[in-house]
Image (cartoon, rainbow, N blue to C red; front, side, top):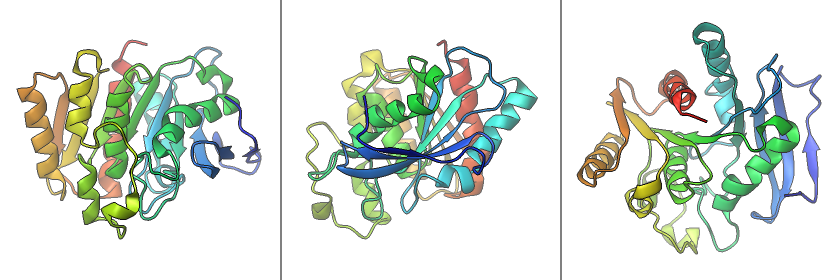
Length: 264
């Protein structure tokens, strides 16, 4: 895949290992931003790609500068021997308070994540092309990770999510835009459970967690119980904490450890 236009940040001016990229997205019909992190000192060879999706109100810099994702990965590599991974942290497309990573009439925010972000990653670091791909996210991004991972089981080696919205209807607790304004043209379910059931026989390894003080905890518990009822294998965990960056910074490590254990 090629982009009509692409702009890269100067590596001498950006933080070490961090790359800011702006591409002309065919899926979105406009420019879009992605932040990448490539650990320093990696050896030649395939480099797994972890896509991290942000929540409502955020953008491509959120996982880096609010969540410290690059620092979490670096610490795990240094202290626990976690294998190197590349992080892709895309904008959701900046529609309204949050696009939901869905297919709107005017732009396909799902295709942007599934197809174009990995293509941009390969331009930054060619060793990620053909390597295992993982997807994770928080809140709206957790919804995107669970749903897109379920709908594209051949594209992702494993799925992990934090504090997830589990149905696009729950976006109404966060966003200003009405359901009618979303103007969705999806031909597949918008409920996470339905998407997981669609491909239950070929889902990649799956985990998700939520804080016990999170406003979305009951939705996550319901998803866990329904997956158990459907005999869909998954890992679910609850930890102290709420819908906060402190929680996501801490528990991103659980996603990265989970990904590291999945055979490539």
